[in-house]
Amino acid sequence: MPTGPTPGAAALRAVRTAVAQSLAGLEPGALALVGLSGGADSLALAAASAHAVRRDPALRVGAVCVDHGLQPGSADRSAAAAESARRLGLDPVIDRTVAVAGPGGPEAAARAARHAALAAAARDRGAEAVLLGHTLDDQAETVLLGLARGSGARSLAGMRPAQIRDGVQWLRPLLGVRRADTRAACAAEGLEPWDDPHNADPAYLRARLRHGALPALERDLGPGVAAALARTADLLRADADALDDWAADALAAASGGDGTYDTAVLVTLPEAVRTRALHRAVLAAGCPAGSVGSGHVRAVDALVADWRGQGPVALPGGIEARRDCGRLAFPPGG
Image (cartoon, rainbow, N blue to C red; front, side, top):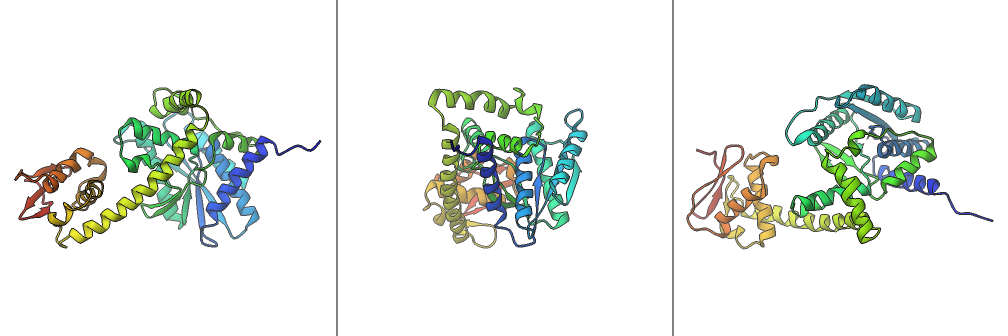
């Protein structure tokens, strides 16, 4: 009696198809680098990339393995991931060791250090893109984290399938693939992924979300919550992109070319567009991006939309926002 494809075969096909479609957008002969931790997601991504190279020799895919040094034996695990990449046929395979330090807690600091190491490796090797193994489940978790923090539409829009940042193209081929499928794909390939204990440690917010909140939502609201959250991110991303483009055009129209802006132009904008424009203006004035919060933007917006002769607004980075003779300026603070 004929039978359909096994779950492992279906998962393998889904992962390979997603990766092939993403790689198809690169220039012929261009190098792409997989960010490989050895976990199921990145290992399935690496294996699917190697499969794509075997099918199309014009493709070039290597790997970067980053040792964060946060756990005993981390160097050995990074070396094992690199060896997996070599066995798969990826080339070049690059090892990087980073020091994790900085604001935002260990998760944020590790992410920043890893991002910097991957970007540096891509620039050093002239790679066109870095491939990351984020899945649909990661996207759903990102949306939930944004909701919990009261973030705006841009944060709720989640991760982009493709973006340019720090001079590097970042691709996330697996954003439409479930985490269970990457693990099944590894099993179908005969690969043994490494399970990072931090991913199950309740000390980390994302781990609590992954193993507690999201499964509870799936149980109480029915299956499909993760997929619905990912769809929400896609919809909000389109909206946020449109509003950001509008805001950029409006700010250019209000600009005097000297770092000041015409408040008569800004005040006519819808609030959602005006606050985006003002956020851009604040960053252009030199305020550190990670330090500018919604409270800062609201205070600057009051100089435009609720003008009562109030004084300057202090902003991060030693910058002030001032209104003078109908123009908004951002001089250094006194």
